[in-house]
Image (cartoon, rainbow, N blue to C red; front, side):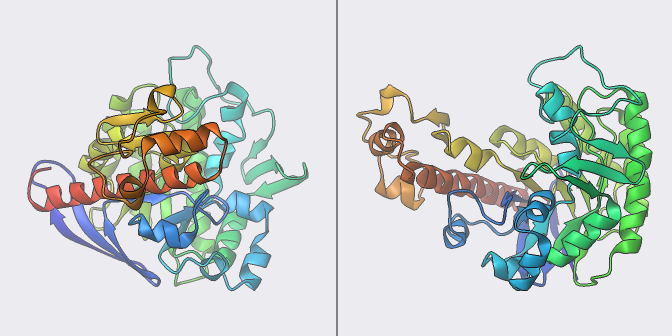
Length: 379
């Protein structure tokens, strides 16, 4: 079972340093949780991932259910053994796919709007490719087109079969353009599903996190945080959409964390670009998952101490400097921008691995320093 101990609280913000103790090891918080959607961090072996200072991963319940299927994972010894990852592991609930494969796909949007939209999702409206019911969601498989039903009972069963250390309650992740009435109805459904998840959970070794929803609406966020926070979850996820302004996101996290029990860990779902990290940690977030390090790497973009660098650009063809002169990772030690640019232009696989490694190492080193700054009273 999960144990969480707060080692240091900031006097300047809600930031804190802690230790998460799981069956598969310790996690020092705050920390990034890299995304291993299908049981792997794209382009890297798990040995390489450990070399980036990564402490914990999150895999995707919906995608692993589709392929290879949780029963095959169980026959392989459970997800840790199946994917050869002996450090701590999370699985999400499938709730994000309710958004990403639903209204997110319909309107071509993510959890954070890149620009304001006049579109609106209202009560009674359904996504084109899935159906949301009071008991769960009917998906259309992205693998073979068959209909798949997933609700709180199904999600719990799948996640328990997969066997991660930390699992999440099934919820509906609402779109950024949902109105107050739609979000309120969705919230009540998510709360009912949270109670079902608690009743359905059988594996006492796994920790179950409840998810706070409520969209961009302060009253709903506070209502959700109070309700979910009152239930006997082992920790809490902060989910849903975050509008079109990151300042709203920061305030929202503050609203939520002011209501959640202080002694339990808090995970922010699906957010964590470099510019987000210090604000969300100062708002009291302990762990957060984000695809940015590897997603950008596969597009030739490196995160550095001077900002993002697009190594596909011809300006780097003769650049013999390391990716980031302030980084001590093996990629920056052994390879030049010129070489990685050449590999990208040659459409080789190697640069995607090199940049994925560097980006994860960069993120984890940055957060390592943030932990030290909290300990030293600087944040």
